[in-house]
Amino acid sequence: MSPPKVTALGGGHGLSASLQALRQITDELVAVVTVADNGGSSGRLRRELGGLPPGDLRMALAALCGDDPLGRQWASVLQSRFHSSGPLNGHAIGNLLIEGIWQQFDAVQGLDMVAGLLNVCGRVLPMSLESLTIEADVIGADPLHPDEPVVVQGQHEVAVTSGDVAAVRLVPANPPACPEAIASVHDADYIVLGPGSWFTSVLPHLLVPELAEAIVSSSAHRILTLNIEPEEETKGIGAAQHLEILAEHAPRLRFDAVVADSSFGADDRNLRTFAGVLGAELVVADLRCCDGSARHDPQRLAAVFRQVMGS
Image (tube, rainbow, N blue to C red; front, side, top):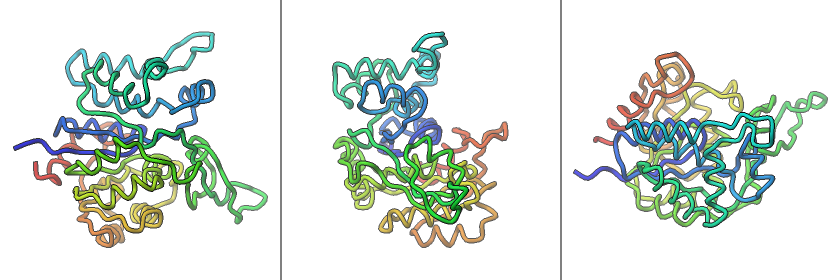
């Protein structure tokens, strides 16, 4: 039996956990990554060099490195940072590697070259070849006018806002999708969306019209993975409300399965109903890391993916 072809979409630590789980199931794996990061090393490189922010792409590449000693060493090198008193301080080594290769090759060629160098399991692609900005309508961010929405711009700024995010959009609006990402969605047997920061890592994929249409129209089975618990940008929002927010941004999108951790989804009486509205079976399991942190355990998540995929 051939391994399933899987396209996983997201960004940051959530996509990293998903990829670490999925690579235990298949080597026919494509990661499609958000390109709106404006914080930390990626933000600094973006302001200095322009182009795509490399950080989330780097994390996806590190997640796809092998479990052998050399693979784990490469993952560690990619994620490690410079410590100095000069301008290199805080930059991730993997970010500079990617940026250096991008000086001579286009974004997709460069990422494929890094993947080949690292002998990763699968392929990493940007969701768009344009560097994007996330913009959100936030209620409660202005203490003088707490009931009036204000516009907050930037992935980092939206992620840490003190207010409640009502809606997000991309600037520029309606950006073109990466053609190779579109092809991977149409070629997939399974599409996995999430986990990750809901407004800044998950929903942005649905704001790229070509990519959203490909996800909706693909013949692949679609799996939505919820977070272990709400993040700062979704504080106070229950599991079922996460599905409601997603439906508001992509009303035509349907899923075959919604995967939720027992600590987040089991007590939400509306979650199964909302999953059913999206056409999905609700799968609840213990997915949290054994140390109790709000992270998915890759082994546990892999077991649930195997169950859902019947592999």
